[in-house]
Image 1 (tube, rainbow, N blue to C red):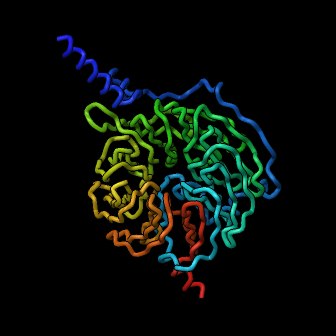
Image 2: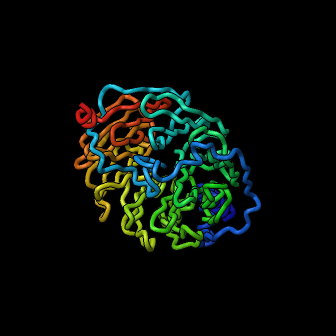
Image 3: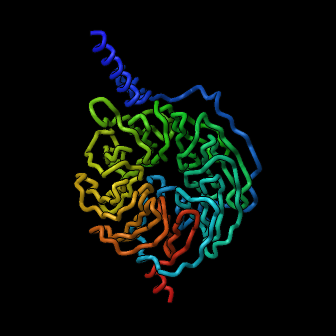
Length: 419
């Protein structure tokens, strides 16, 4: 009997270690972490920098057009421009520039300027026509994220816990906010507020003009994801297995849905949520693809990709596109969750796909970038470079971030229209 008792104790210890600290405590207590608006913000500090330059101070919405202002293309994070008619990328690059560190998340773009973060912690402003560097800044901390831009500012996040606003015209620091944890979340700027999540479990709304916190919501779980902002709500995923939405103006909780992996464990989300306005889509690290009702949080459907998954879903034309480490890009019906096709390329897909017109683009960890038809998944274009998210596009050009290099490729149809 003593030996049997020892085996029981040993098995229990192994189980607790496997479940992980936060998940194990959740399982033992039978409860999930409860979120709340955080009113104790003494650990946050804001430092002011330079005033806006004359060029940025005079900018307004009339000069803010043809933009890809944040990760995902807009605050919904849909990763799509279905109405662009570029055709496939041309074979010959317009320009190419090396940035001396790999680019995990795609650039932002507005009014002829690209803004991109490198993993080593530099932010670049690059002339989209020529590839010339207009300015660059090293702020400290690695940057696995995309900048967010409005008419006057570029806001960047870093894993040293800082979120920094830079002058769009000059790159000079306007303000810096220090949070209680690393920030991988790509910010979104909507109605004068900057929205992002932190490893300290909190979802933030910060005034873009000053960096002062309007509200902070403690989700109860680490946030790596970038929030989706739409229809008066801010929605995010967490490592604690939750998908949640709060009110954009106040941070008040609207709903929280916890997704279980099995009878004992909750899921864990690295991927950001994306939305078509009615449904919110994301994928857990286990490979489970999840759709919930945007208004209520009710679970609508689940499916899965093979292996683990980190890709924020791209949403376009009734399709949801998700990659996994199984070597395939998968297309699901947005309403039913039925898998419509999968396209096997043999590499691990870690970055978010990109939908431009009738094509979906994606890269593999093994250094390849592909273009597939959204209707059936047939591979119709290939570039022997790439690693994470492939890039972005404007009405005339593709801008692909391939490892540590940014390249400009015109669309074939755009080239023909220009002749």
